[in-house]
Image (cartoon, rainbow, N blue to C red; front, side, top):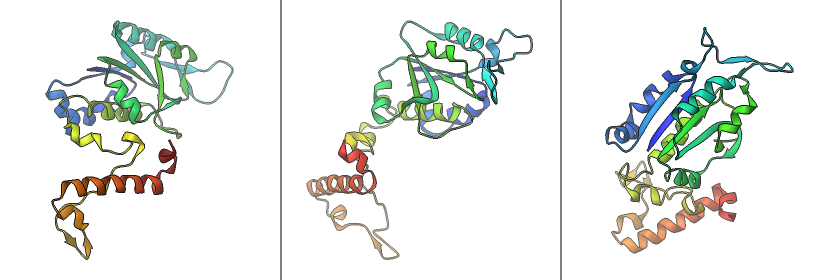
Length: 221
């Protein structure tokens, strides 16, 4: 998979691509991440990418020209163009799995007061990571990338993510490690029993219980 990210702040991605599982996925050839400065596509002599919106209002608006040219430069026949915006569909684990099917994804990070409405015509999909506002789409785009890359074949083991929260609309089960008794807080006996069938049953029961208590909206689905 190749992911091209269009942003006004490419430096924000330095740590993201050089640490942890994302770095290992890049080094292992599972994904290629290219971060592009939108300003490099500006035809303005001063590399201007924003302007005041017609009709007045607070803040600056991203201009169409640099982003249209960037997408035209990067887009291939099989590319998926995603626009990060609070007005997009709310992202979830099902969408993460769906995005693993694409070989090339272009992510546009909005910023400032917003972007020229005509930029929406470039997008195949508009996504939001929740009902709140960030200063730009950079952090949201990292969340999207992280959630997708970890699901690619060979990045982590399938067992590591198949029983995670949100698969089958259930939250994850509780996990424990050594010591078995820490300050009077004990690991459930079933996990120490070595009886795999009982452990599997207990974990499913815990997933159902947790989802009912913490996310009844998911359980109803």
